Structure formats: C-alpha cells, structure tokens
Length: 452
Image (cartoon, rainbow, N blue to C red; front, top):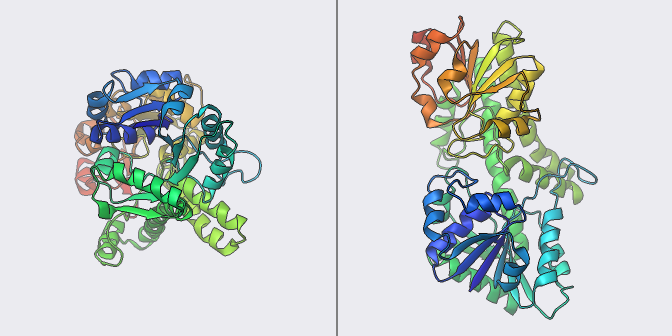
C-alpha cells in the first residue's frame, strides 16, 4: 500500500510520521509545492517543533517515509491520499472574516482528478466546513480517466505541543464516509490502518457530514470553555476573587471537569478562532441567526481579554507606555511549539506598538523574522527587538509580561531580573504560572489574570 499526503504542515508531517512508525510496511510520501518546506523536512532542522517529532521522523525517513515536491508522481501512485492543506479564514468576498477559504482544497481535488489513473481513497484531514466532501466528490467525478474515488472525512484532534503523544494515544479517531458498500469498504481500509496501534473501541465511524461537523464542534466547545473562564476572570478582578480558586472549585464538579478552565490572555492557534468563525458563518448561511450570535460571542470575549490585558499594562504604568521598554516573554501561542498562528502575543504587541512602547521579545522557539511577519512590520522596525534569553529581554525594562507558559519562565532568577529593571518594576503574568507572593517579596509590583 502507498499513501500520499498533500501538505507538509503541522498536521500532515506529524500524522504521516506516526503512521510510518506504526506501519513500516506502508510507503508514505508527504508532498508539498513549497521546496523550502520539503527541504527542511529532509534536513536535520525540521520546520516544526514538537516534542518527540525529530526522533519519529529521523527513524522513518528514507525507510518508508519520504518528503517530495513531485506531487503528480506520488498522487498518481498512491492508494490513499490525505489532503492536509491550509484552510484559512477568507479575507475577501462572500464570507470574508468568517468562512473558510477552500481554494487550496479545490486545487488538491483538481490535481488528484488530473493525474490519477487508478482508484483511490481520498481523505479529508484538513479542518473543513460541513458538506465540503460534496465539492471534492463533484470535482473527482470529472476525472479524465476511469479512476473511481471514495472520499472520507478523518479530522485531526491534535493539540500542538503534545501532537506526537496525541497521535500515539488518541482520545478517539473519527472516520466518516458514505454509507454505501463502497464507502463502508473505504472506511474499513482506513480503520484497519489506525487499528494497528489504536484500540478499536476508540475508532469511531460516522457518515461524512457528521465527521466534518464534529471537528468544528469540538474546537468550538473548547474555545467556549476558555472564553467562559476568561469572562469570569474579569469579574474576579472586580470582586477580589481568585480565578484559579474559582476554576478549581468549578472543575471538581464531575459534570464540568477541570480541563480548559485555565484563565489567560486568551486562546490562539490555527484552529480555535478559525473554526468558531466557520461555525458562525455556517449558522448564518442556514438562517440560524441566534445560534450564530451565541458562538460569535466566544470570539468577542477572546478579543476582549487581550485588549483588557494591554489596558491593564498601560493603566498600571501611569497611563502611558510611550517610550517605555516592555519585555514580553513568549510569542508562540502555547508552550512546546513554535506555532504563532493567532497567538495572543501578536495582538498584544500591535496594541503596545500603537501605544508607542518599545517591545523586547524572547521566545525559545520563534525567530525574529517570524515575529515581524506575524505582527506585520519590517524586520528593522525600531519598536520591536528580539533577544536570545529572557534575562536579556528584561534588562532595563519598565515591565515584564508573560505571554506563553514556557516551563523555563517559572525557573528564571527573578531576583536578578528585578535588580536590572527600572523601578518600580512591574510584572504581568498573562498565563498565571508564577508565584506572585514570592515575586512581591522580591519587590515586583505584580498583576495576573483574574487575581488582585
């Protein structure tokens, strides 16, 4: 059996590496039209940082895992084709700002139809709006050869930072397909691959539409929990309650549970905001106005939380940060990943720059170039500086803000940092990971989310 994955990104690369690891008899090729990305996957410095990913790729690469720019060849040779390309939120035309941009999905479908000479199973791995499979099917039906296709939905449920562990021990694997003899046979083929290492009771099968909608719904529910606790964090600050104590009390209720009740500067990443907005657009499309408004509020609270954090910095620093050095520790949207997509740090940096602050950034995995691309500024922008250590970023700073929960930030010598800062020295813990009492004993004026 041969598998081809179109798209060498955060989903395609790790997922195919795990399948290659668990199924050494299957030849797997990840293809992408970006030669630099493929070159990085074939190098010693992979384009994606995930715990355990290097070892996984290096073990399988050039054995049964390959990375190539020869899309036509490997698509034609494959028995199963995974589509794992970007589906960003549209920035133009109908649905701009909410709907998913499916142009890359369509291009993949057209390429498969163009070059295929044998029957194939096509697997949607990208996060897609419900009923996208019908679009793919329509395109594939116009294949110039006699090749036949079955389209499956197999959404990913990976958390960045733990992607390898999530692939190794998934909560569930979801496979959706047509409930016809041919569709059920295709489902079984993919089922048998995952069953090599995933307990069969964890492999769920549905019709294709339920599978597509389940991915959006899962991310919307998780984002909703984060926005819910962040909304309560504002009330905690106003009433002198402690959001961590409230979250712990609420999380012990077995009907609610403790996960995703950690208050912070807001959620980021490639999926949560995009998928919630996509859900909003779908509801609007089907005339479900009240439902759309409900889910849109999840995004509004997330935006509010980021702006509230910046406002607190400005207000605390005597109502101005103009010309002041603000150290930002962390730029990735969460620890143990170099992914910065929709990171809260992007919006906080922009707002601080609008206030004419001098921003000094340290993140252990994110480059200066990537930071500038995300903020939307030239690399020589005079207001943004990146550093090779947290201590260097904090040197002579008026204030420090924790924006990513990297473990190393809990182990810094804050006494040494305090000694080199301007006084009064302010510290804003946007991830609630530090011991505020210990910092106050050093001399910091500390502020956290949902605490006073």
